[in-house]
Image (cartoon, rainbow over the protein chains, first blue to last red):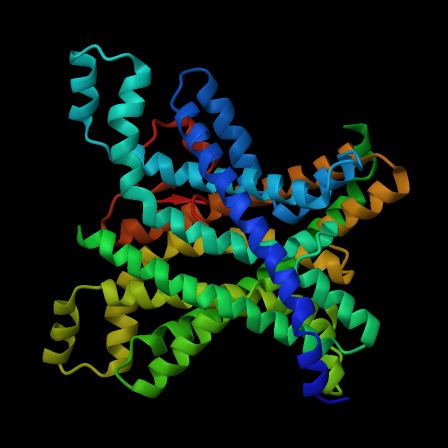
Length: 212
Length: 241
């Protein structure tokens, strides 16, 4: 068998539908990772709770996301949709990475800022909310951007838990028609078409931030 | 616990397959990273073009798509049927090699310019400059990131279970189906992955300490062991994606 262009063109709409699901999953999962990661980073600094939180997220970070997906999928009741499971697992897994980024930002805040807060006897909520986090987050925005692309490249794993994203569509086409070459090659190209431009944009943002 | 102990041989087999994939994949990735990374530091536009195309293409596509491409698409238009393990090593190695190439390129470029100028003044050949001056200095800078990449590769190797390679993930899935005990089956596998990762982190830290000592630089930390020490800013092995 050889490459069949007509067939390749005929499957583009199906694959694009899968791509839409992929992008949906990334956007929601990333939002979860951004918010949860911040909580984890702050909790890690709390005496007593910190080491436990660290150990839990170290575990999540150093074990494969695919296994975590399969595990939660096997446990979850059937009423929860695969997409919900996928987005939650992606979000929690990536929170472990974003927490590291926030942590580096928090550690980068000058010591004098903390001392000033103590001197003014600001309550902890205002110390974090008004002084430390605004400075910390601004510094790590570019690093957080990288995880968006990274997460995008992990979404094909969702196919293992039957989320109808692009990989799932490609596999279905391959099995139905016995034409895997066209389906997987196009899926790869669509992937590039999204990830290369976003990498360029993020690199540009990084450079702009670095210049400030 | 009993579940795990009773089925330890099965998990061990799976873990060995995972380790073998990690080792072969890392080896391929390392070779590619070195070759493509060095190409990326050259003046020659063709060499740099090759490096750019390779890194952009293989960083941009997910390892899973590469894996399925090698396993299912290649046999469609060529007479070759790649063994699932070989397809896995290729997909993981090509993907991670692209990240590694960027690390190598950046580390070599980060060596102070005066070092290169000194080698030119000494009339050193390009090969001697690379081997004796640039690479040893870049090495210490590459190691922490290489450590992260190897752990990423180890974790990503779980995808081969989707093309029926009996790795750790596949063993967990099979035992889950045959026993119906979801939690012990998966938790056992996750713990083994965690242990493998911690061992890898420990090994990389030893390499790093060695490289830093040779250059007279301060060591860097990472892994679960860093719990024992107060947190310090800087690179942590296993920290980044």
